[in-house]
Amino acid sequence: MTSKLERHAEQLAALGHPIRLKILRRVVQAGPEGAAAGDIQNHVDLPASTLSHHLKRLVDADLLTTRNEGTYHYYAADYGALRGLTDYLWEDCCAKGKSGCC
Picture (cartoon, rainbow, N blue to C red):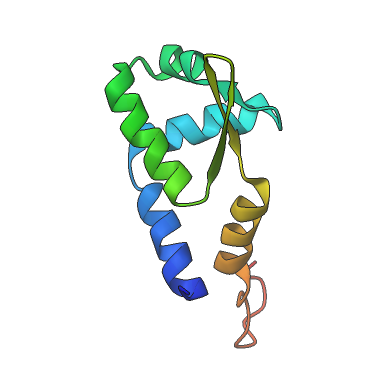
């Protein structure tokens, strides 16, 4: 089992590419139902194989979930994982008595 630190490091590494950030924002904006791969592809203007690589990286980092409906592939944000990541970044804010840092 990976530690919380290792899991969050992997998530941040997955987000460390401008295209993946753009993909994530598009999927988050789509809401809980997610966005079809074709919609994401139109938004980021990438070949399908390149998009597939980036989507896989985000899914492998547990930031996106995927589901199939017929021939369509949908990607949705894992809001719990995203909240966990941001909570982790802020969990020790002001822990050493410094006020006003949050």
